[in-house]
Length: 113
Image 1 (spheres, rainbow, N blue to C red):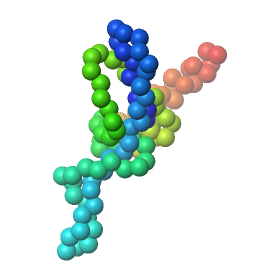
Image 2 (image 1 turned 60 degrees about the vertical axis):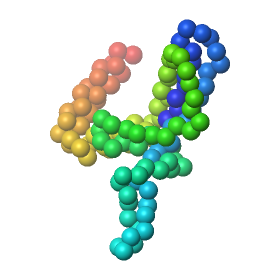
Image 3 (image 1 turned 90 degrees about the horizontal axis):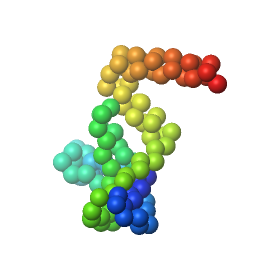
Image 4 (image 1 turned 90 degrees about the vertical axis):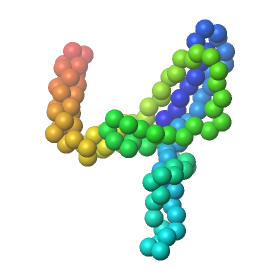
């Protein structure tokens, strides 16, 4: 995902920042390498990382802003697929109802064109 920040009351050059995925730090233990859930690290792949269907976390590098900004969230198909996977895993019945309603809306929109 990419976030673009533009001054709310002042027209300044917009700033774009790519959100990177985060995950637990790998640590060595007597059992080998394991995840340390208390410590997050930034990953190279694009984020954010969904911890549930309704919560996502990500890493922004070198962000320094002051004042009021309009934030534009640039979503990708891959990110929406990742969210949908988290929704399905967390609540299959709700996800199915959501998708059925979406299919209905898409069919209606297709007929309207």
